[in-house]
Image (cartoon, rainbow, N blue to C red):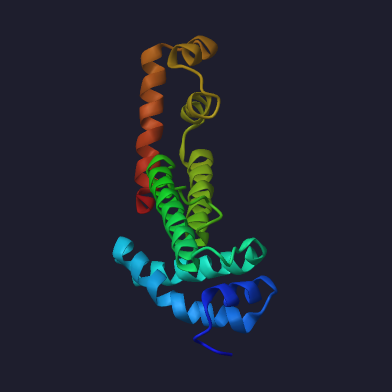
Length: 183
């Protein structure tokens, strides 16, 4: 293929899906498009991607090429539009990264944390069932498991509110002492 062929001839051949003519146009104009993009971005990696995307678009839309118009102007227009889209998408991604919270690890994401949580739950149940006196356990479970207020527990069990508070504090002290290795 004649690398010195005029752009109009090459464009007419590219319209007919001539890969060799496209290769010549790519070799001729890729450095110019790259430098123009590099001037705007100062990022060679981004420029390489945008140049590839530019020429891919040209090839995909080769049937709309007009040999009488400047190929360089067409290629530069496409590359600058792609650059603008890239900047717009980057701004959107940056904004969304600030607005969307990073998801916290769930129990299933970290097997060691899931195991530790499971062991803590087992030990907690064991301490409640084996180390708390009966009345203390009943009051604590009404408070923590069923979500009842101290006044509701006192009324239900016929105790004073102070007695309920004392029993809950007693249960918490036993739990802290027995489960201190977890904290």
